[in-house]
Length: 150
Length: 412
Image (cartoon, rainbow over all chains, first blue to last red; front, side, top):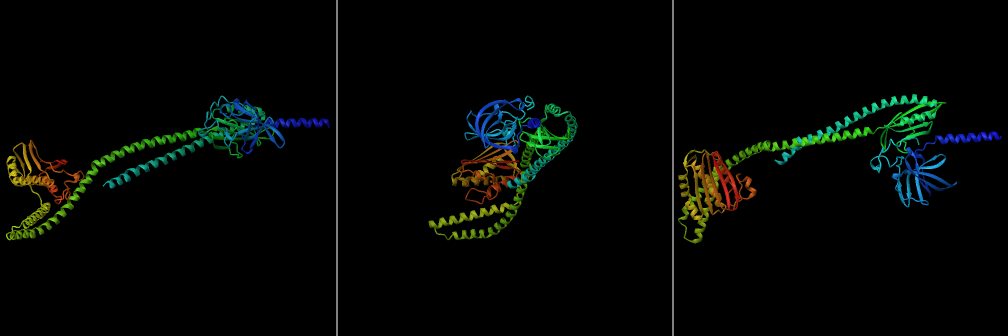
């Protein structure tokens, strides 16, 4: 019985690992949701193509209790919000799990009544692109340098 | 005349120009679509090749294991023209490489080739499907940068604008040239035709008026003769004498007007003979002496150059009389006639200090019934021009300002 239980536990772990491997982070329109919470940390992390991304850790109250969300915002150079730990924000984005952790790919952040946009409704990053999307960078900026698996 | 000219420009220049411009526009559009469609054909043909290669390679790599497949996709992604690669295992996306940080235009449709319009521009996507081991179905989406098509379209539009701009400039230049030559030659011809028509109309009118004048002349003569007879019985009463003179004056005026109308229809046949200018001046002074004395006019006649010229003495006299009459009607007090016969050029200039000629009627001063004066029918200068033309000459108004009116007659 104990052996069966151990075997089942190993199988469960394996299945979780396989599932986790199959999880690929990308903006899914049908998984867009809005969360509200308190900022517990703001970090710069290497993300797509090893570029420095602003990542916010949010404490969100849910029915099941408090959850921590990893909110991926934008490259550092594009980010121009004056956020601080303890600040209350509303984040709209595409939900996904990265290594089992709740994650959001940010579409917009509302802070102190002001809304900051980072991606369009299809998830296209506003720091890229052309025309109205053009900000500091443009499409293909540093494209070759940022190649790599994510 | 102006309206006709505007319509001509509209129908023969502007409308054809616009039609050509519209034709170029549609031709360019058609051409652009043709090339675009050819581009797509070629791209799709290449797409089939890439798809086949991916299906074969994918199958073998999947057999080796998913990591080998991903490593191959990593290498593939280094290609400049690829903007994303997405690998599905069943319905699950298991690997993504994207230029756009998490953006992947994934759809549920299984089309093999798609041209996507994304915020990043056009993307040509090829979807390949293959089976791995054991019985795992993979779907591979490769997105190629298709922006060159947009660039091509922009270049085509830019080229069209350049061509259309150059074409417009050339057409505008041609239009300006046509309008210039039209005004210079065609319009002049039209004016001549119109002048001819006007002359014919005037000739018909003159014939009619001269007939009427002739009919009036006879009863008017009878009135004049009867009045002369009646004059003998007239008292020396001041008022009666005033009315007598007034009636005689008006009869003379009617007679002069009738004479003008009779002259209009007459053919002028000049008799060219040698004319001694000095004799002519003396004779003319003698004729006009009384008239000028009674009106207190300072009249001078000067001559310059040759003594003898060949012309019609009576017509020349009539021309001078008409122009002097014109000056007197303009209240001139000083009149100077300058006759010059130098080499082949024979000119007569009449200068007076009258009130001048209105600027508005200056261009049509020699046309019949044109006058700024209250007296007369406006035929004097018209008849004068006819007389001058009969002598193969020209008459022009050199100055028309008050105090200095100058007519110059140049005879051939």
